[in-house]
Length: 276
Image 1 (tube, rainbow, N blue to C red):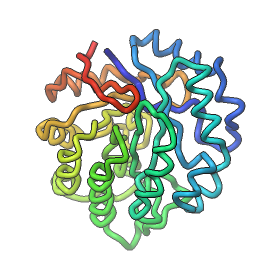
Image 2 (cartoon, rainbow, N blue to C red):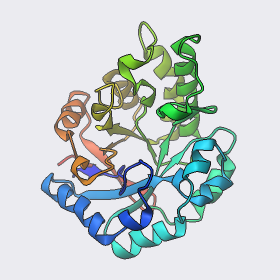
Image 3 (tube, one colour):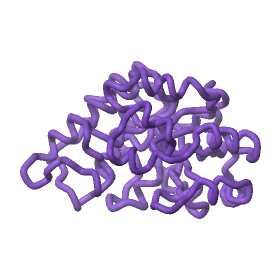
Image 4 (cartoon, rainbow, N blue to C red):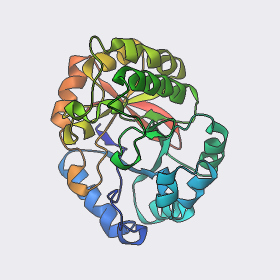
């Protein structure tokens, strides 16, 4: 069994209206690529901040600029017009856990992908909304705060899958990186991840980003596996051609660290299936 649960039916760029991309024909384009690449379990998980209801949770400037779509319409479309699993990518926003829980509990998801895109008001992976001054502040502080938030996201119980777990490295050499052994940062998150039992995502998306690496780093993944965490496999595709992209590298990493099963979800119930 191969899976791809973390994918988006439309790009992130402005002007990508839901009506244009939330169609049965577009979903079939993703399904066709998945079949070619041997992926049996396919689900979509659109960004929560692109739906108007997200403003009940947080009113960050990026969210206010993006939250236009109808969440009921999205969930109904996936259930009624596609054979995809129904998921959503929801941000962990410290202090807003109850509000996010209220939003998520109103829908019958197959799984919820949890992401840490923000450290306070700082957008980790979005150039236009960075507030961290890379010229005057050491990267150690950003990385520390990121991995603390990652552990809190796991402990929150809001999510089934922890997405791109070391997203903070996304910029590669374009941003300062802490010196030395990065395990001192991973350790800030690992207890929360282990205690929660959340599935940790191995994502090929990092290979398409400036960092040019899988998420997470092998050392971090080994720590998660040693802690008994299940693993989910995804591409974070935003176009059909990226579904299951670079899975050969991901499978090599999984084999190298001793992972033989992947997490599979239905109505937020998890089971483990042997990697096919």
